[in-house]
Length: 372
Image 1 (tube, helix red, strand yellow):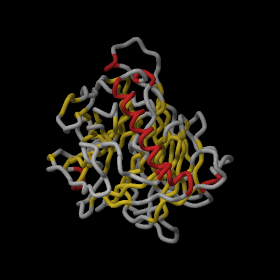
Image 2 (spheres, one colour):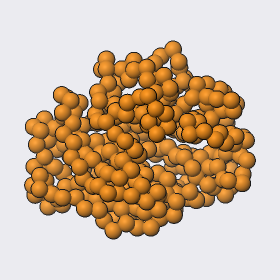
Image 3 (cartoon, helix red, strand yellow):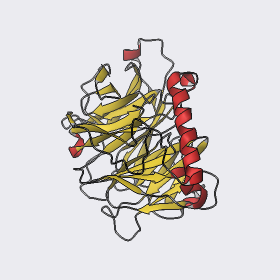
């Protein structure tokens, strides 16, 4: 879902300068424990099982006191089978739907629909690279026995496509490993359930073809079996896998390096994993879903990549998505609620200062941030 690394191509842009100002303001707020002058930030939310898109401003637009401000949800817009949301520049987001990906502006007005791939897509999973320049999307249509993958730039141009071979046999158990995608640069990794248990991993990379972009076919590795992979996310530029026994970095082959567990996150199961950053600090956040398997706690944990232990942020049910925003806050979306946590102060001393922003949401799915 949403990461907060910035593209080198945007380093001198006005949008990025504004992001920097927002982050400084958020950092100062975290140091004092106050929020009287919280910078304006807009969140986009995918609701109603992916059929509605709406926004909420987290602070008054006029810069007045935020302590008495009550956020309200905008009138939702209807969308068709929405899957994921990603921030591009702060003024633009990406919406992945089942049949297309598109960019939208801060008012949620469509800006550009991505080019169609050389096959009829049924986008099911997606991933955005940390530099915010590449979108990987995986297609699996109900009547198609083949999984396919496409890599786009943010202008909507196809970089390459790949066939991943026969789609995995449907495993009719609640606890079967899901299909997951991660992307770094122009390289993508896919994990999917393996017949007989566990997961299998496929790596797709450019083949340096001189063919037109729409005709470029990536080089894919043969599926390799491994332990059950529950999710994939990046800490900096290294992909990590969430498993039943902890979190592991991936090898160049795409397989988890089971000799190098992230000790700070413990030898416990994680079902969801998110990567992001706060200023120059890369963060990894993990959570276990007891709806899939019982016996573990449901704390959202965060690790800064260097500390000996991870911190508990909060105990959550029905966690759907989260984003680390440039105002210094962590925004967490459950099925029915949106909550803000002070990430700067939380990482400093464990005081996450939760504040409820929205409640009574219906089947929320994804969120990301914008700058109004």
